[in-house]
Length: 423
RNA sequence: GGAGAAUUGGCAGAGUGGUCGAAUGCGGCAGUCUUGAAAACUGUUGAGGGUCACACCUCCGGGGGUUCGAAUCCCUCAUUCUCCGCCA
Image (cartoon, rainbow, N blue to C red; front, side):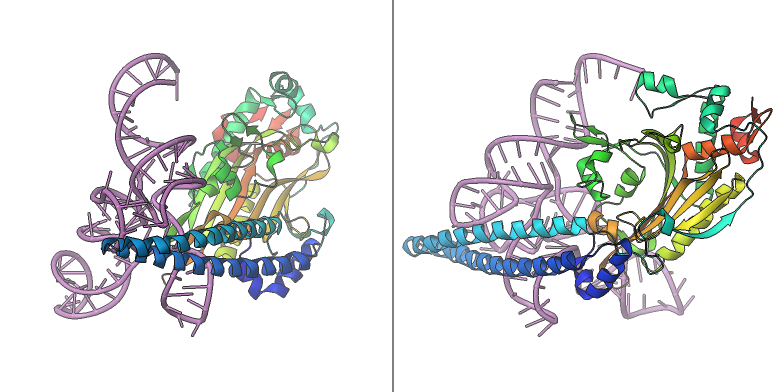
């Protein structure tokens, strides 16, 4: 959620930057400013009324004490009227505040200066590419065929137990999953992140805090009995660690990494690019979260990009980094880099990580602040990124590392798997 | 699941109808002292709205109510603790 004072001071900049998302925000922005003026006017009127009522109440108290009950009763009539007035004002104020909030919830974050204009994947900017695309043997298979051939992932069994999009990993497939999770976490901890194990369900306040609610309700599984939501990403519980707190400046940065399963309802389409592991209702992911000082958040973002790169390099997977265009940048992000690995057998790029700086957009809703050097509370910047999403990494490994004699395990993973080949 | 108790500022903890945004202690910040640090002493220190700055308004777990007036009384929800039951 954007801050109203920021909108007021940077009206033109906000409208111009939002146009990178192909949004004509002029009307919304003007409404925000108007609503806020209205809000202020109502607040002032209400405050004045309450001030009068307060001072009358004090007077009444004094009159009672000095035994002048008659005079006190006269004043009571006055306060009765003031009460009606203030009730009415409070209702109107509340309505205005809600309207303003609803409006602010609908305005996405202002893209960073470097974000290219555009509205689809095609407009994303490739900024780096590395690694060799392996030459596969004749008869190389996509991962869903490999999964069957080596009996490591059972999609049908998952369908029987739960439904489509809930695969069952078994044998060396299960072990490989566990190896990847442990490897990612170890790498993140070595880079200075603190490991967390987080709840897989969150309450309404947390879902609101990171912006899954009120708009994206349908994307989460909802446990109605207890009004809890299954997390769509560790970002939700992980970022809500910092909801409603004031940090000391010297506590920054805060860094979190955690492994969680992620649950997404999103209505799946069918076809080759959602086949196999490409899109699931339940998948595993290791997440990175940082809370940063505003002056340092973009350095931190670069650091996260480098960190994720290191992992992909060590796994020897061909990858590229995209700077997302305005239209493809998620609602809350100011700048997002996507990582994609190349799946040789599918002959396409697969997104495996998304690293974003949200600046103060999440912090504003979360009320995540720190005491700055002036002793004032200031909103912190939040960032997050995946390191990494398991299914597509697994798909990439299976497909790129396949040989005629089996699937070779990347060297860095071998200490974790305890085997060198799936055959 | 049953019975009881509690929820106050960064933390601990007073406060049961008006003068309470709230004693006190700890912590934080600034200063005195010191070569420096510690100790001691002095001052300062919640958040949001509003204002050029004041004034003023709101907030004592959330929501609602009683009252001229609520941290304090009532209702409700949530959470925590203790005892009992159940349980990986």
